[in-house]
Length: 259
Image (cartoon, rainbow, N blue to C red; front, side):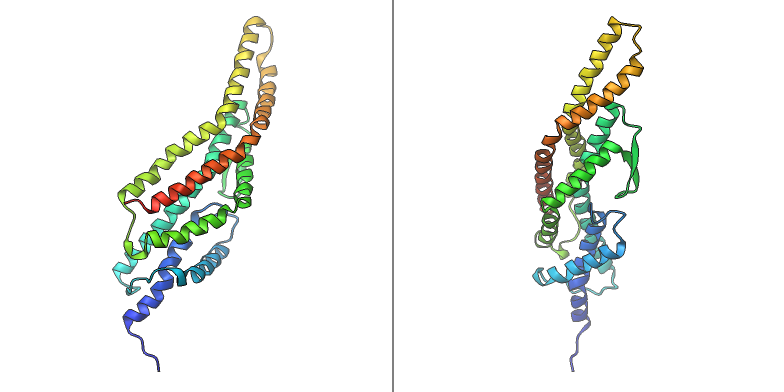
């Protein structure tokens, strides 16, 4: 007859329980898997499957009583780490949402909005177009596999018993907001510059021919030239997305190794 002590039972439970919280919280936040149209049961089942698959390769979990305060703090730390890593990837996708919003406002399509089924919010149609495109690119580049690899690697760099994130890690996470806006501006800058030249041209035409109705002519022409600018810069989206993806994965590696 097998007998187990409380410490041994706590260690066996924690060996699967602590990684599960980090993996599940990551899947609840990360794009694609954390979208609103993905059922919570599907995400939980995927988290359980990943946990069972990766636990044999992870370092030994600390032996704690699952009902103790120390165990509760450890659960909170794992949830924070998983959500922080998922947030870092979410910022990558929001770069193109912000870029599409900037271009839509400049070309007069800011009113053309639609509901984003992934986040449940209303965004510009141009932003939704870019979001769907980068989602397909991300899957085609096997970015989801890299995410899982980075998640599993985090258990080696930042073990479960290591505790919470450091202050420098939270500072790096907050700095991603400025990175998001600067990257979005770099993506939208060619189209915004082209539309600025179009608006300047219409301003000169209005001064030369004041009797011309600039609103009836300028608005459809601005939309047309905006669509042409998006089409002309469409070929640069893949290299830009690949570069931003590499920067995101490098940031995740730097984030989990922050002192």
